Length: 176
Image 1 (cartoon, rainbow, N blue to C red):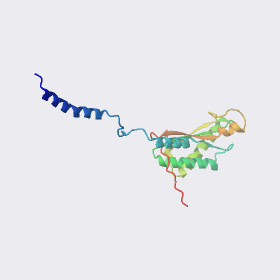
Image 2 (cartoon, one colour):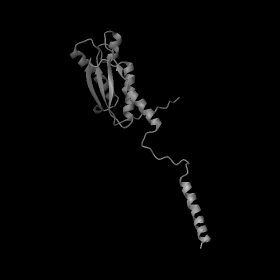
Image 3 (tube, rainbow, N blue to C red):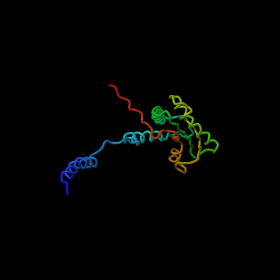
Image 4 (cartoon, rainbow, N blue to C red):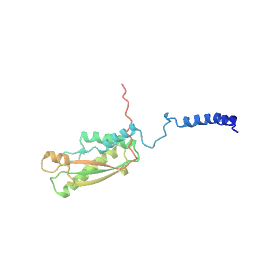
């Protein structure tokens, strides 16, 4: 014989289970799981810091002293150094074509040393900065003329060690 009460009790007990199952499959948004990826703002800030660290400085003909514009660029690098204590860089000094290979090699070295000396003078530990001279090797613009020479008289900055992304220093608040 067919027992209706037993079947009804299964149906009654099955309804809450089915409702629970549908609730679990609900497509409503769930709380976000923590991601290991940096937030968008941190990525943008890191890109800005990297751009600052990659900025070149330029020199006058046959000179290794720093111009005011070179000092301003180095000052921005100081702030990035302070915000990223694990960061290390390499400064590569270059010269333009005129001059002997030996002279240009020495001039490139003096240019890299000038940038290093400035950074160390602003409190960045010397161990965090390596210097290399390239002389007139790896010209950015080849050929004679002041335009080409001006682009080749430079220091380049190469990031050696940094975290997954650089930290941009906090903006200073203005007081009035």
